[in-house]
Image (cartoon, rainbow, N blue to C red):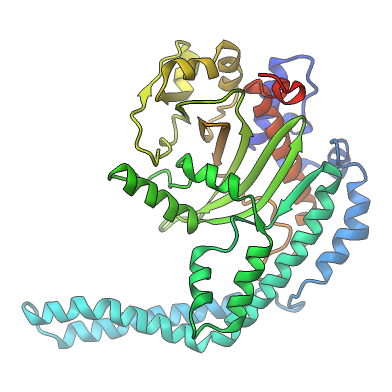
Length: 410
């Protein structure tokens, strides 16, 4: 796994550092409880999982006979609605004449028939959907309770819904015809939300825009698009606090890709080593630039080392500031971060923001749709936490942040 490689690389840079257990093996699932319990804050994790985490998860609603039953029913209904739409549209195409008003009628019927059939499927499923929604809320509450118990020794705070309820759910909850369960769900997500500053920081850095989307327009239009994209992102599993002397926030957001699996993004926000007046963007060669919502003129920065140029691209609004951030010691450490991953970073204001795209959806302690959890998902959640916190340490070391956090100086 990429995070394991990162820790290993920086451990090799500084012989005085103790390599993370993952550095010896890139497969995170090769970790066992003995290795997990060696990490600071994870002592006794196995017994805590048995005594406290399992009972919490056992309270979450699930179907003991067939946990995936409701999910399959939903898929059948929506597939049936889509199939019905295709049949109805093909009949319309056959009956309506080609050209003239016939083509216009076909064009107008397409969205009408589509939403009619999907709406019918939703109407027929309304009872099941409401039950699933209520059960998912209960599972999310159980997940939040369990993760809070796991991270309490780490001195961190868990936020189940960073940024609060999605704007789509907020809109739905405000409609007079919406079931009261949706209003309760939106209120519940607002109550367990938080990390608004971290979410706003990531939005202002343009990292909520998909890697394959380029926004064309005025700075005002780009800013509005960034706000819209951030408001409609699926953001989950936030962690905030201090770790290894670093003030940090991290969460995942999910990128929906047409005709392909969703892409998980791990985002980490750390305090910059000094107040920044411009913006500096870094990307691995395998991914695209972050979108700057303010539309500032950014120029590519040539730092010199060919090893850096072979792996990364750097651009900034202030060349002097970019070179101050990426001094020779930082360059040496950043080169070790590559490993072929889709890595992007933005430095601006008081923040350094890192985005790692790809890999598994982390912290999946329990499936919110089915209620499924196992001893393996409990172990893997501990592995995910240990690895991501090791990555925070790695980034803090690479960008020389720990000294500032520990001493309070620049």
